[in-house]
Image (cartoon, rainbow, N blue to C red):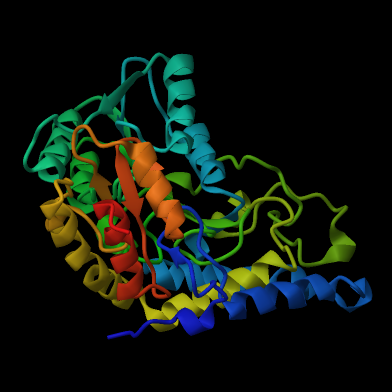
Length: 383
C-alpha cells in the first residue's frame, strides 16, 4: 500500500487541503517540468519540427495506458467542454429522440445537449436522484437504466457525480445504451486518475477529462478517447497539425484534405504547448507509477473512518458500493448552519468545497489522518 506522498508537494504544513476535486496541487516534479518548458522558449531556434509531435505523442500514449485504450484513439483537448462539444457536433440526434443526463450534472456536460435538443427537436431527459431513499446511489442508477430505451440517442454523464461523488455503474449503463443504439458520453474529470477506468470494459463512445484535477497536471489541457463512431467525424478546428503530412514543414502549403490517422484530427490547435505538455507528461508518469488502484485504496482508507464519524453527527453519506474513496459528499443534517460550518473550516485551515447541500471532501496521497481529524473537529464544532 502507498504511504503519504506529501513530501513530493509544496503544500503548507499548517493547511489541510482536502479539495483535489476543485484543483490538484502540482507536485514538485510537475512544477519543475513546467518551469523548464517555459525556459525552452528563450531560444526558439532550439525547438525543432519534431518537438511539435514527440511530446504530444508521448502524452497521448501515457493517457491511453491510464485508461487502457489505444493511443491512436486519444485526442489532446484544452478542456472537458471541448471534448463534449466534439460529441455534440458529431453524434446524430433526430427529432423526438431522447438525450439522457443526470440531475445537477456539471454544466459542461449539460449545455451542449440543451443546444442539441433545442436545435434538433430532441427530448432532454434529466434523471434526478430519488428523494428520501435509503439506497440513493442504487436507486439513482436504476432510474437511469429505466430512462434508456428505444429512441435514446445519447447518454451523457460522469463516472461519479461532481457534487457528492455518487458513483454510476458505467458498465451496466453502457451495456443498456448499446442495446438500444445510443452513444455513451462520459465526463471523467472527477474520476480519471484516481478511480480505475478500462475503456475496453466500459466501452464509451467518448471519454473526456481535464488534466488539472485528478490527472494532477496543468490547467487548460485535457485528453479525450474517441471510439469508432467518430472515425470519420468533423473536428471543431481545421488545424494544420491535424492534417496528414504535417510533419513536413516545407510542404505545408501543399494543402491536404486528409487527416492524420486516428483521433489526432480532433486535437486542439497549438496542442504542442512547450510548457504544459511536459507538465502533463510528468504528471501522467507519476500517476502510472502510483496507479489509480493504489490511489483509490489509499483515499478509501482515509475516508472510511470519516464516514463513520460524520454519520454519528447526523450527516448522510452515500453507501460504500456507490461512492469512491477519493470524492465523498457529506450531506448536512437538517437545520445545519452551513455558513457557521464554513467559518469553522476556514478557522482550522481545512479546504473542502460546498456543492449544493453537500460538503465535498476529496483527498489524495498528500493527505493523512491528521487532515481528516481536522475536518471532523470542524464539523463537530470543537475548539
